[in-house]
Structure formats: structure tokens, C-alpha cells
Image (cartoon, rainbow, N blue to C red; front, side, top):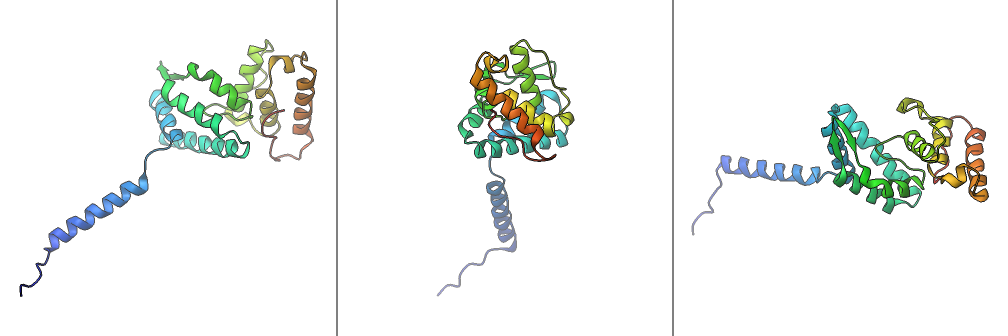
Amino acid sequence: MLAPKRRSPRTHWVLLSLAAAGGALVSAGCPSPEERACDRICDCSGCSEARYLECVDKAETARADAVKASCTGSFDAYVSCVEEELECKDEKYLFDGCDGQRDSLRGCGISVFRTVCEDANDVFMACGLGLPFSTNPDECVGQILCSARCIAGMSCNGLNGIDFEESQRFNECTSACFNKPQGAEPPRGGP
């Protein structure tokens, strides 16, 4: 009877290396839609690795917020749109074709790739009310963040007092922002 043929140590090493590389590829997986959108944003604006990781972290936090607010479909639609529609002009990114998806997500009081304060400013500008918030992300926190979430979920009729019920919900939402202890979680889903 013939003895079984032994593999050479070199062949064994190559097979182990391939198995390890294959395992690394499987565990690394494909990038999430949030990561792909952040890739496109950072490719355009030339952001650092730290800013890229911050973008991904904020997008993942927004996804968790969307799940809590039962707005996962709106979140997914917006992120997919940003990934597909993003245009880069002079190192500034635009995704104007995603306004409907963004507005749907705003209705949940959630913002991705921009601060909620920037979204609230957009709503105020569209309603002819000016710019209430700073565009500095470090200043969009606490009670200001809470108030911005209330605004981002409003229509112009509610903000201008034309729709009484919506205006009342807005007043209740913003009042809750200032009646909560400092650091408390702001309301989700707007008014």
C-alpha cells in the first residue's frame, strides 16, 4: 500500500495564508451605505481619516435614532440618495436631488451628513424667518439641538402660526426642551 503523500511545509503555509486572507476579507465585509456616502463626501472635501470616522460615527448614530423613531425607511432612502446623487463642486459637496428624502427624515427630527441646526436653518429660510442657529457643529448641542429638532420637523404654516394645531405642537416641543434637565435626551420625531 502506498503511503499518503505529505504536503510540503511551503504548500501548508500558502494554504494557511490564503485561508487567513479569505477570513479577513469575509470579516471586513462590504462597506455600509453610510460608509460609502461618507467616502463620497470625504473624497470631495478632502477630509482627514478622523473626519471620515466622525462622519461614519454620526451616520451610524443617526441610523440608531431612525430605528428608535421608526423611520428606518426614510433613513435608508436618504442615505442611498446621497450616495447616488452627491455632486462635488470646488471641494464642496451637494446632493440637491435628495430634498424629498431629507424632508421625510427631517419629519422624524433626524439629520444625517449635516447638523440638525443646519436643517432647522433651511426650514427657517424656506419660511422667510432668517437663520436662528450657528452652523458650527460644536454649538448645536443641548437645548439648542432640542429646539432645532422641533423646528426641523415643522412646516411653514406651523412655524408662522397659520396651522394652529401644528403651532401648538411646536410650542409644546420647544417648551419641553427648556423644561428638561441639562443633558437630557431631546425629543425625537419633532412636534
